[in-house]
Image (cartoon, rainbow, N blue to C red; front, top):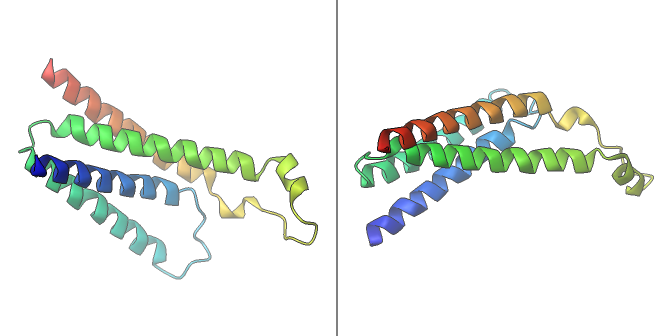
Length: 139
């Protein structure tokens, strides 16, 4: 029982960092210091892969395709929906009117929406393929 709880917690932790990778891909990091983006993404990838491998090892890699697919697919869809909603809310003309007059207007420079969409749909595709392969293997 305790081992199953550890497996689930490892999967949750892994999913958080898949969502983090997808979410960070929506932001423009041009103004950040040299190499900052690479450091952040490498840390996130490490914190995604290590707990995933721990969870899969607990299950002896029996259903690794299905489990990995579910984690990647659900986390990347969650991130895509959240960031798309934030993008649409922030840049809505009605919301812009509600901002104080002396506040600097929000610009699209903080978002690199196309990059985020490409990364998110790449993860969604990978997760979907892994889930499909895992379910196909079981039947």
